[in-house]
Amino acid sequence: MMNKHVVCLYEESGLSGEEWAVNGYDVFCYDILHTEERVEIVGTGRKIFVPWDATDPAQNDALYARHAGHAAIVLAFPPCTDLAVLGAAWFASKKAANPNYRAEAMALVYVAYNMAEALGCPYAIENPVSVISTQWRKPDHIFDPYEYGGYLPEDDVHPAYPEYIEPRDAYPKKTCYWIGGGFVMPEPCPVPCPPGYSKQHRKLGGKSEKTKRIRSASPRGVAKAIYEAHNGEADQ
Image 1 (cartoon, rainbow, N blue to C red):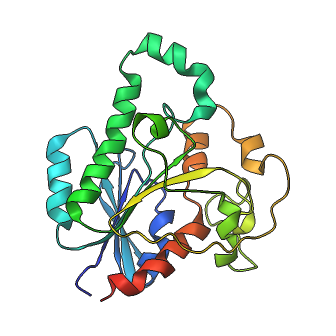
Image 2 (spheres, helix red, strand yellow):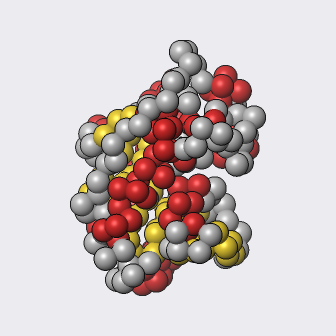
């Protein structure tokens, strides 16, 4: 394969690139929460966790140089704390504390967009329903995780947070994708979803780092679907 790298931005868990790594790709997971570069062997590939501060131009230059000519796809998950409309009740207090809070949050979105465009490969930028729609542009796709749960096996159990996240991603959470570079949105394969709020919505309130990490964990069904929709093209 000429293109071997999967570039995941703002990715702490590594779940978004799991299927790619299992099938022989090098999946680079960049996030400020990583304290050192480490490698995890997964299937016939690797997940490489890399410390990354998206506000540092030198680090962004190094990231681009590492993947230029090798990137099969970019998957980006910019922090949504200051963007998601579910937090609108706190927007005024956030602005009072930091008048630039929204511009700083949007800057992280633009870093992902500019990096993906520079690398010249398919990409998707993910966020919940957010002010990105008014600050930048409307999303290309909106879905709920359960709509892609059928890509996971019937005996699925979440590998990291089984007590919070339903098997087969059988939960609702409006999720938006901004895409480009020839990204192909996979066909849905939904599973039954209980009505009302999801289990993690009920359990994962608050501002602790643990709950933030769990809330931001990538849905695995759509991640696998993206691999299946793109790996043939990337392997050429």
